[in-house]
Length: 347
Ligand code: PMV
Image (tube, rainbow, N blue to C red; front, side):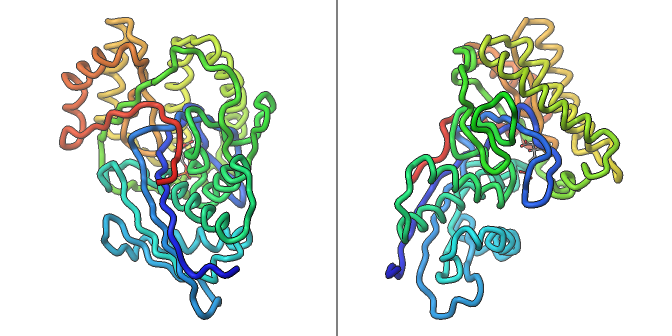
């Protein structure tokens, strides 16, 4: 090819799993299928500028976060490049300048790996398309998701909205361990514009990374049961989404969150990512639900922050509850209001 330089920019959101991915095989193959809501406001925007270089012996790139050079991001991207080199033959021919910004405060404890890796994968796919490929929109998204998975597993669920499945599941047509697919079945209108308010409980560095956490599922005494349960729960989720059964949704989603953390507490070595305020918030949510009949529920990812999920028609009342009762448990009173979104977009 004869292109010397150029640039592409993509904006890609974070996602929150309802049925959780925890445990993987080699090459970022998940031990069980998962499903997530794609978020709307929590996004990473990444610009990748590429310029032809003389020798094609290794990878050459620089990374900037908010215009500041970030050499500590380089090892993770170097690993990513090594994994995807065979799928993107041009990687060693160019120098890349990767400039990235997040809409959420960095070091807020919100994982930027899903939004960051998916945005980067999409930029690289745009370069691939420009250089050589006549590729359909569908195949473009599939391959970008495939690449994003190799950056960070859950990143492969961030490209589309509003619900994405990753991992082979017998009842979900088209589902794959290699990339995320848009949830293909009917979703009840009660889930339209579902709200996710993220309460920032702890912004500190996690004591155990998700990579280590996934690995601790190897030889975990409850692992096989857990992987089976995820399949069953995802089957169950299909009917919940169709019927709009919010009580069943709540029970499933909260159980999934606590099971994820139970896996952490029962691995060897064991660890706890929840903080006292995580539990305070969970108890407040339960009290509020009991006393008001609200359909509010919580979920957690691999950290102390709490995602508060609720239907759009409760937005005003639940937000008032959050402000009056839950913000006190957030670090510096910080929280982020988000809503289900439609996925990544080219800028
Ligand atoms: O994508 P990773 O390797 O950071 O794993 C994320 C795992 C959870 O967020 C805990 C669950 C999930 O399915 O997103």
